[in-house]
Length: 430
Image (tube, rainbow, N blue to C red; front, side):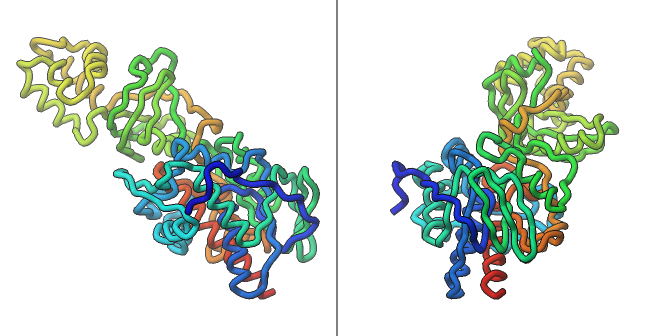
């Protein structure tokens, strides 16, 4: 049976003075790393004292809001190409250690059955993120993990053969530390960038830039698209250089909002636009309201259906509000003959509307963080730091971010599994 949805997610324990392993951050990656560390040590017949500390007052807040409160646990097909940040071979090396089938099996054993939706996303059959969180907390406790929150870590000091971790709830010594603090997205959940500062204080670098990922984009005030607020439809969005070179493209549902654009296609391309813009302010975004249709094809059917009028022709393929807006912007007569210049303007707007993006909704709204600790500074077989022995990483604190659809959770499960099992193996054989 799944954990009771009415039960509290976790009751905090007092912070002990010492442990074998401290996991900083008790979100998805942290709970998973701690659980697998405990299981691995128990299987070796050498149980470890494992403490997971989290600075958030509400444990697992990011899990609880994920997927509209349903928690998109993973996707049925996960590949390194679904991620950005680090190199595909490096990401693949971690992902293959704990795949989708392993995730499904873990949650099934924890009493959480998953269902596949048409998009390939996997959700708990309960449609409740709390089911997922309570299963993770229960698994960690069953593995002997002590969970302490709120206990914000302010400093981690490596000393001879151990770490001294300072928190606002006290100080704890340990033989090893796994940093699972997340990045900077949804700071109210606890991932406010503090973990990135801890990493740099321990000698690590951060990629540049560190920007929001999976974040809605903002258009100028009173841009014509904002008048279409509430409209949702499939589109293609293309990121291009100032010279017109195609850099990236996404296809999927797009939502027009009162301040700009959102929806899966926009969220997926947002990090690519933000990262590219940091290197070249002249990069551009363009939106094709007719995904799969080229400008040449659109021109052909506008010519072929000339007698019906531009508005009727567009309304066969697009919502009425949008079709009318495109005709008005192109100065294209909605009925009657369509002059060649007007037809060209209409084709351009229908297949490549320029998007003069002025910003994004920021980390407070973003679902993920682009950038973080480079995987080049981590031993991928163990997730242990190449710079600070005994320190490991898992989850969003690393320079890996996935597209929308459960991919960031799968990265948390895979990297948490590798970090937790490897840390326990080191500690039980030392």
